[in-house]
Length: 260
Length: 260
Figure: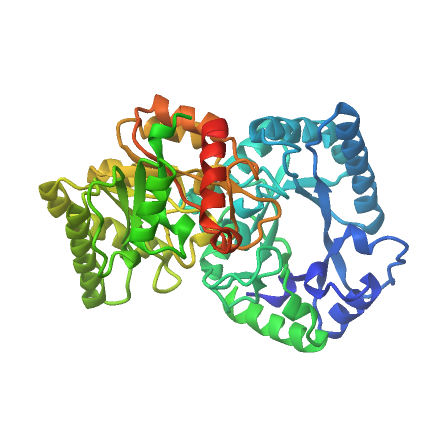
């Protein structure tokens, strides 16, 4: 697809600092970057690079064993909203968090309560919250929100947005109806590919074209549902992290243009 | 739960031959065994051991690139039904298979066609077919049927059964409604646990109690949906395979009684 919509999600270049990643985007004419909070600490963003921030990753992680801990998570999300404002990120991506115990239903309620508690601040700041459903293989350690159906219901209930990542949702038999149901609420779209066999649960995502995902079909569905913003390439993959950044970014541009 | 319903799925004891596994069941007063086809080759089952066969694993793997290849898969499933008859297995577990390419929807149709093509033979032989939805992390290499909702729809359409495995379905926000929807169709129930972090995609299943799954709650829901047959412990885990079988089986009995 059109390279004007390409965004480098920073985790794809995990070894680079934020400044290095922005300069790499500039060098490769990548117009957007998705920023991670753990890279933000102490960084001063270079000005006038022509690279705009597409989102801040990540808020969320709401469930916790005690009320005090849950409040601390909410406070951290309020800070994340302020950080999004600080770097001009229009969207804060929410990775909702795992259960603190075996009760996944209770954890889902904690997620709803957590998002409800930060909605006003986000609206006041003009930051859109985007619930990102994660692949069900992360239900135990990263997100009890595992399907687009569930994320949609929550987003409608709480009047927030949805972030769709092809890696997390491609398997879903209800994918296209749920993308249509998200119409008007999609505030972010991430692409990567699903390798077979999956090399690793966390660090096994593939470059577009190296796996099974019907990227163009999903992208077109997301567009039909009204999303025309930046498309982030988010690849957690150690081999890519260990490769020469300029080589990876050259391939990424080519694959994005040809396959997404 | 009641040990009279305990079944050892043979994959839990992958290093043992079928005869060794049956004798181990006898030694530990485990009344049922779930048999795998790759262990069946050339084996003569010992008689009068008091160990009954709860199921045969596995049929399925229907999608393929060509019509000839798809027919070969159907023929293999017809043989599997005959093998089930041969060992007195009331149920053939169907692991439906991955797509031969990127078109997951087409693969789902191939699965429906494949099951339809073996239904009559299964019914004539008195073997129940059980569609087992697999965890979505296996959508690329083992099964395009990834949720209980989808398995239920297919089972209703084709008038076959459902096999529910806690490892594959525990994350699903629609789990309990879909178990209720499967009422009267459940022909098998498998238990193991979900470890955090997940040690391995294929060989990372845990012994009951070592992970996050609400085993008793799910078992009670399955019972409320009318299933009162054998409950197979199916654990793909290299550490367990490398351990002393008698130690594992002793733990398995204890955990089953206390936690399932």
